Amino acid sequence: MSLPQPNFDVEPSEKVLSLRRKRHKQYQHAQRTARYRALGWELTGRLTVNLTLSLVALAALVKLVPYYQTQRQVLTELETSVETLQAHNKRLRSDFTRYFDPAQTSQVLQENGARESAKHVPIVWVDKLPQTVTEAQTNDSSDSAIETEAAGDSTPEADLLD
Image 1 (cartoon, rainbow, N blue to C red):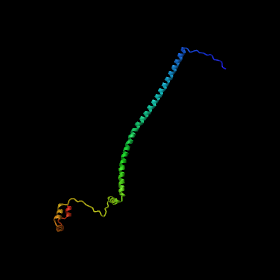
Image 2: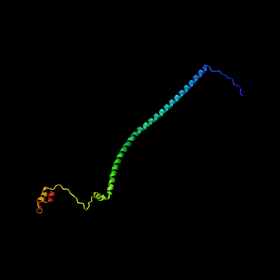
Image 3: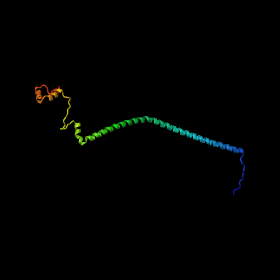
Image 4: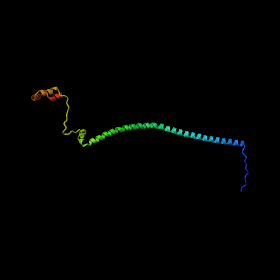
């Protein structure tokens, strides 16, 4: 067995207790200050990194804005070109169906080849005929018209040419 240990029930003096409290407060204050200092450095580091990232992002955006504007302009030009080409394509498709429509084949050939069918009778518009020719046909009989042609005085063709 073990020997009994002496019991020292001596309480520390007031001076020792006050020194212990003082050291304990200094230790807690030092730890608190160190904690706050560490938080301060951490926040400073975070703010520095975030500010740097923000500046880099802003610089990238500044470089991208002219590129974006150029691309937007090219896009509008392409959209305009696409609209024009779609209208052209629509017209070509309608012409294509017209060219291969059996009902319109003769009309298309006539338009493109300047060929006319045998049944085609050309109509020529002429300005109003001179008054003398029309009066001669209405007033004179057919015999008088024949006499004037034989005499060679005036013919409707001669009046038209003059």
